[in-house]
Structure formats: C-alpha cells, structure tokens
Image 1 (spheres, rainbow, N blue to C red):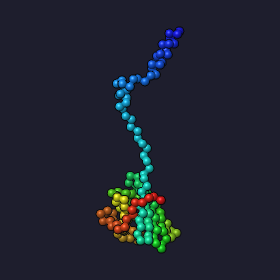
Image 2 (image 1 turned 30 degrees about the vertical axis):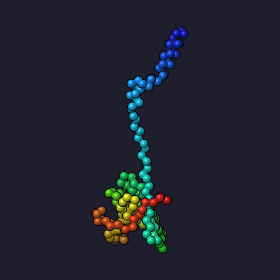
Image 3 (image 1 turned 180 degrees about the vertical axis):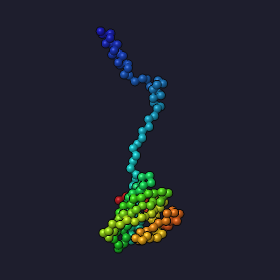
Image 4 (image 1 turned 60 degrees about the vertical axis):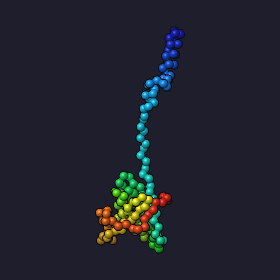
Length: 157
C-alpha cells in the first residue's frame, strides 16, 4: 500500500510544478499577447468663454461622433441674461444646433451656428431673419460669415 501512496504523491508533486523557464513551450507562451479592449470613455467636455466689452458668454459642449449637446449662456451688459441648452450636429468643424433658452421669463428656441478652429469658436452671423424673427443661416458653409471676437478655450465651470 505504501508504494502506491508514495507513487501517487510523487506524481501529484511533479504534475503541479511549473515547467522550467528555458523550455520552448514556456517561451512560446511568454511571447503571446492578449488584447484587452478598454471601455469607451465618455466624450470630454469642451468649454469656451467670450468677453467682448462688458458682455460675457460661455459655451460648453461635448460631441459624440457627429452629435453635439451642451450649454450656452449670454451675459449681456444691462440686459437680462439668457442661458439654455444646445443640441445639434457638427460636420467639418461647423456646429449647427438649436439653442433652447430662458430669457426675460420666456422660453425661446433659435438656430445657432459656430465654427471650431483650434482653441477658438466663432459664432456665425445670420444672413437674414425669418417671419418670426429667428436667424437664418446659409446652408452653404463657404458663405457663412462669423463674428470677429471668438470664444476661447477656458476651464469648465
């Protein structure tokens, strides 16, 4: 009975040991790689500030592929501030969105267009107004005109 017990113990002991590090089998295992896919992170928030005289404006947004959403605030000197959300698309560094905001106690919506260039964002100047007084922007991006004073990249608040 003892020889069987000793043989079983030796067999168990040798089968649990790691192979020597210089064997071809180990070298092959060490050179294999495993690819781990990291989970997709949330889009980074981008923040911009524009100061023109006594007026200050803030623009915050994040993009997910071609979809954009964020916040826009205008603090115009001696006028009621208006602040709200923007939702739209971005293509060829041009943002076309709808701005839903509260101003003077009234909820309003209007289209907005911005051009993103490096660490600056330029607001488009409308080519005309529609029957309700909302700005109308040219569909042809090459015909869009933009304000001279840009929003500049800033810390998010």
